[in-house]
Length: 291
Ligand code: OGA
Ligand code: MN
Image 1 (cartoon, rainbow, N blue to C red):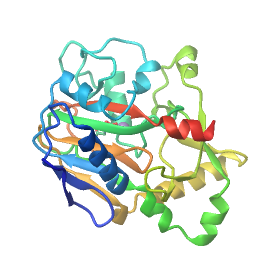
Image 2 (cartoon, rainbow, N blue to C red):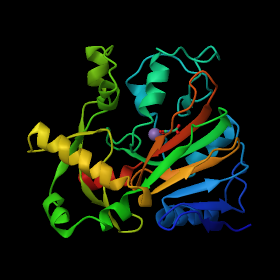
Image 3 (tube, rainbow, N blue to C red):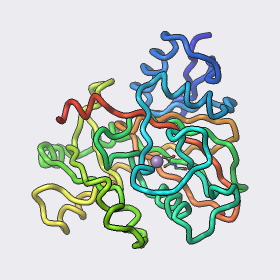
Image 4 (cartoon, rainbow, N blue to C red):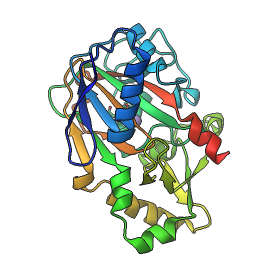
């Protein structure tokens, strides 16, 4: 069957149907999904519960997998694969994680607008998040369209930002939220990286405004001016007209392009179980372009 697309927002995001993600994908289906991702930035697949093997096999169709922050944080995990990222408030023993645990702190940090792994090079290309268990309220995920955000910038600001780079640091969001228990070793595992603030999306050739909570300063600017500008740009990029809210159902798989969108989780009762599993591919081509 062919990939069927139904737009869910005036600017980006489509619901995708007609493909069984749990079975091996034909090369033309992978190409169709890539093309849809280039156009829409976010694809929502409904009723596609995947087990761990299926999710890994699906993700590998789109490139080399990333393990994200796991590189910086020690500790075991619950999955068969290192490349499955546990987006849940559940501890390794299967119980709901303690309120003051790092796991919960990290889930709260996901509620700040970000692009996955923008703190490393290569950063993330696609993230694929599969819903396993959901709380009774909240816990939606919102997406913001960075290409539309660029288009809507005033010409003067576009010109001012043209040559600028921002520094992105893995623990900035965690530190902003007040966690301080990081060892020197952990702080240094993922040294900051720089990305241009204005970038061109490889697949669509559209320009975009690359901001998010991992960006902590503008190179060559004072900290206050840089942080203020980054905060303003993030506010601009996440105005309501650029945002789509996904209301999860168990068995949903949402796939997004971290090079073209931001996302954030929304609040829920941390005493209720919320379990999603993520796979993420690496944006190798942008790493090559900036090397
Ligand atoms: C992620 C993420 C937000 C959420 O999986 O990368 O940021 O709603 N998730 O869980
Ligand atoms: Mn994320």
